[in-house]
Image (cartoon, rainbow, N blue to C red; front, side, top):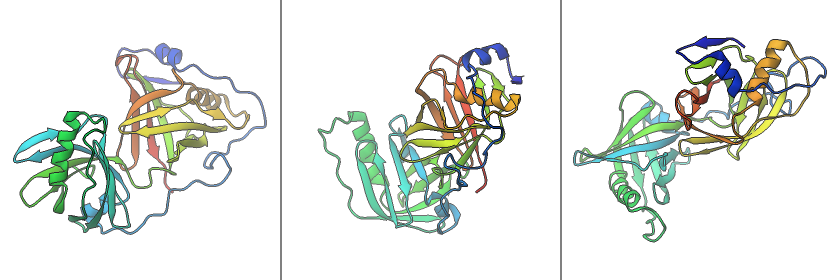
Length: 296
């Protein structure tokens, strides 16, 4: 496995932390490009949104970063505890950081209108006082007619009311995130990373926590739980015992092994890429995945 150097960490460190798993012999070949059940994988069919900035909100999940009231910025609770997801049935659901909510939501290309009453959070629900204070401010701003504007790019939006207060949100999961094939171009440890993983390897995450895919030669199943901005993954289990070329089998071994089982990562996404890193033991020993969404 070739290791590209980006700093002082060595390829030996990567090999030590990503131990190659063995692979038994069977018939040659690979079923890359199919699910573990042998059927072609594809994302959910796209639904029609309003277009523009409003269209980008549809079908996606967004984490709340902060609320600005009278020019004062109030940060959201950590680990994306406050979030919102816009559906094609003209509703938005999510959490204000203390309690779940669901409201009517009308979207155009540049504006959002919210209707219906908030479900009030209970004071004795165990929510920290700081989170309750943020939830109160969010409920004040996230109401009625709001304009939608890019803050930096299509991954970050501001939802602004008529008084100039706004909710700052960032993409957490794009539309079609679940059920999509995610290729793994490379793994990383510290400042070194692998560059020759099997191109046919991919993961398919499902909302119920199951994961299926192909490791380059063999199909696999696993489990992955997304909660806020964290991803907890379990080691893959092979569903077949095929043997392919030595390079592919070496890369498959890296994908089969994890430092801990399960292991928790902090993840972030764009519309077609995802990265997940575990820095719990420091940057030098940090371990991570990089994913790229494959075409339907």
